[in-house]
Length: 144
Image (tube, rainbow, N blue to C red):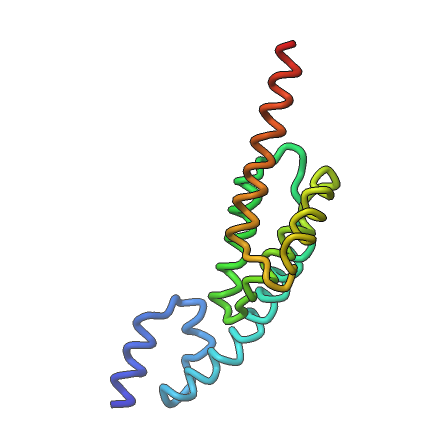
């Protein structure tokens, strides 16, 4: 059984990776070598993604929907690495990533809802509505 598992592992591995486990004598030794090798990479990835998430700020050239998609992508990538972020924490991260022009909206939302219970999806709806209002206002001023 172990020979079969080792054969399957060897067949599945790229040549570069295979060379690092070629002298292992059991499937468990191969697996342990991979665990040591790739756990470090997972930790690096997790730290990198968390840093990107907590420092992410929307830029003037980015649409709000693109920004929210970026946040959701980071949440998903961290989830794959077994680092789930609580729903209320997602809303807080979204708040902190917004530009100063959204300060009043953030104050209004956090006064009306306890921030610990703010739901990301509900906050997204309000922020997208605010962006739409601002664009409509800008369009009216430009056409005047």
